[in-house]
Each structure stands twice: as structure tokens, then as C-alpha cells.
Image 1 (spheres, rainbow, N blue to C red):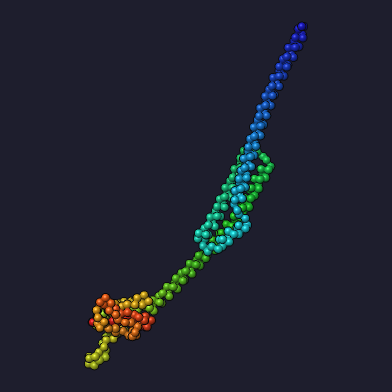
Image 2 (image 1 turned 120 degrees about the horizontal axis):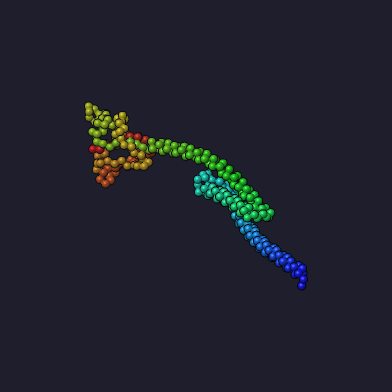
Length: 293
């Protein structure tokens, strides 16, 4: 074979080898590119699935927050029936509002994390973006309803505070009236009594001798100018017995002018007791003077 022909064949072989190398390199690059594309596609599909699942979970959580204009009205009505927001029922309503607020804030945080994750992964799908926008709108609507309800709560709390002041004033007035009634009852029911010997009663200026002739036949009668400290009070609505220390009824003499029949003397346990049997008549005379001998 002639030299030029051999040279031409060598050149062709070299060119074919070079072409083979170039084609192989392109094949390798295509294979890598295809593998990367499949991996990217799988990653995108995974991100899409995760994003879709997250959106579904967020939507479920929003659906669980049962808040609408009707429910706002119901909660407000519950609050309006409460005369005191510190009572258990009123506190339950306030707790429900707090739970709703917390749930909405957690939902908004989840949406923000979802958006951040999609932004970092580079996944941009119009359908997902629209669903996320719808979630945001739903959250905003529910937050608006909560704001309305919170405003009503603030207004009701102000009203309740005013009612509490009014109730307290009324209670104070009622207490004062009851106290006045009790004071009047006690004043009407209370008599003042003293039990003592002739000497004790005379020395204290509670009784004096009058009448008679030449010092004979005088009787002891109350002076009317009493030292109140010598008498003891007795609420005849609560207690109807005046006790003495003598052991015979004949040793007891009532000197004051209580109506006959409004009291009686009894010997109880070896001591004479004066029992008030008709308190209304008995206390017509406020001072009860008893002399013992």
C-alpha cells in the first residue's frame, strides 16, 4: 500500500477516535443531566406533595376554628347574659376567645413557614400559590371576626364594671337599711333591768320610799332618775328570763310598773326566775326593777 494511503487511513482513524471520545463525553453529560433532571423532578414532586399536605392540614385546622358571624353573635349573647365576667360561665367565654386567637396565630405562623419553605426550594406552582392566598384570606376573615368579638367583650366588661359598682352601692344601701331596721328592732325589744336588795337599790338612787304617815306605811317606788350603768340590757326577742339569786318567790318583789300578766315568777333549780310571757306588753315599761330580800 502506498504511503499516502496509509497516512490518510491513520488520519481517519484518529478523527474517528476523537469523534468517539466527544460523543461519549456528550453521552455521559446527557446521562448526568437526565439523572439530575429526574432527581430535581422527584424533589419538586416531594416538595409539592409536602406543600399540598401542609395546606390541607392548615385548612383542616381553620375549619376546626368554628367562627362565623353567627357564632360571634352567640358568643356575644353569652357574654351579655353574664352579670359578672368573673363568674365561671363568663370566664369560659373569655377562655374560648383566647383559644381562638392562639389557634389563628399558630395557623398564620404555619402558613409563613410553608411560604418560606417553598421559596427556599424554588417550587413555584400557581395552584399552590392560589391555595396559600386563600388560606391567608380565611385567616384574615376569622381574625376580623375575633377583633369584633373582642371589641364587644371590652364594651361588656366596661358595662359589667359599672354594674358591679351599682350592685355594690345597692348592697351597701341594703346593708345600711337592714342595720337600721335591726337597730330599731333592738331598741323596741330591749328593756333594762336591775335586781338588788332594798339597800342596794336605795343607795343607787333607783328606788325611794314614799307615802305613809309619820314614816309608817311608806312604799318603795322607782325614782325614774336612773343611773343607766346600774341596769343590764335584755333583748326580749332573744331572751325572756330574768334570773335572781334568791330561793323563794316570796323574797322577790317587782317594783316597776310592768303590766300584770306580762310576766310570771317561777322557782327553777332552787332559784327564782322571772319569765316574760308577753314581751310586747312587758316592754311598754323600759326599766324593770326587782327587789330581793
